[in-house]
Image 1 (cartoon, rainbow, N blue to C red):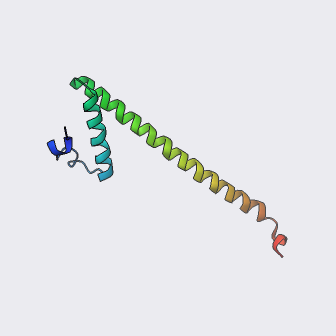
Image 2: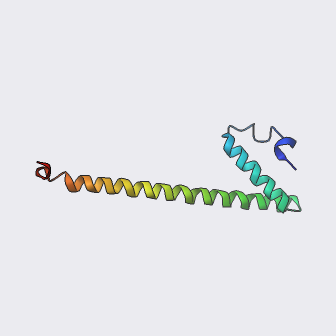
Image 3: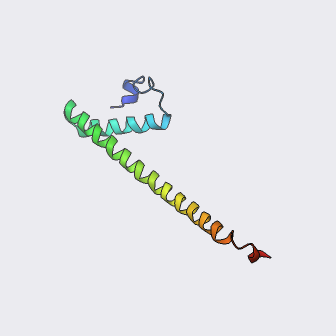
Length: 89
């Protein structure tokens, strides 16, 4: 069952980025296929969205950690070299 074809206005009523709409529809379809009842489907969708969000946040925190480490190293080099101006003369 294609939720986008069945209810095209489902997510378009919200001001969400297109990629987020695609991801949410995909998660809804996965949970719909895995569940047998409405209550089970809602619970499954909640779990799918939770797992997707956790994975996204882990990836974002890894990128932030790498960038912060690189900036800290650059700042460290700057403060290690800045007090010694005679080094380059």
